[in-house]
Length: 147
Image 1 (cartoon, rainbow, N blue to C red):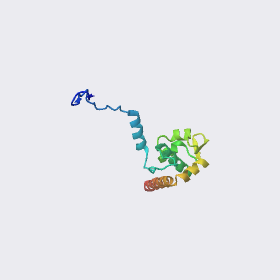
Image 2: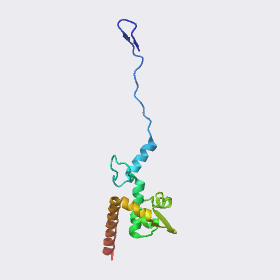
Image 3: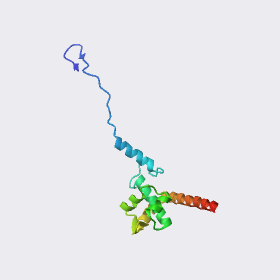
């Protein structure tokens, strides 16, 4: 408190500021850490506008789309064995982006929207194709040595 009515002015300290105790946002922190852990790389350019961000979910959906394009209609079980992740069934069933068609009992195929998405994310799709080829060459080498 400051008083200017007395000569010289008088200053009296009413109280000292206390440090702020921030609330811990455990859910938000966990969500960010989970998102970052599920990504294989950073495919977003900082400051970019009018371009859809590559989230962990979109990255997994693109991986599934690449594998369906390369292997043809497949079941979620086969796709998971190829390395599409544990959320494969949920992603195919929800079909959030509209990239997949349900073509039979537990079988999904890539549709025209999915083809366009692979063109839109060509760089990411190509790296995933290379990953699939590398897996396949590793499997064929393992099979050759066993026989």
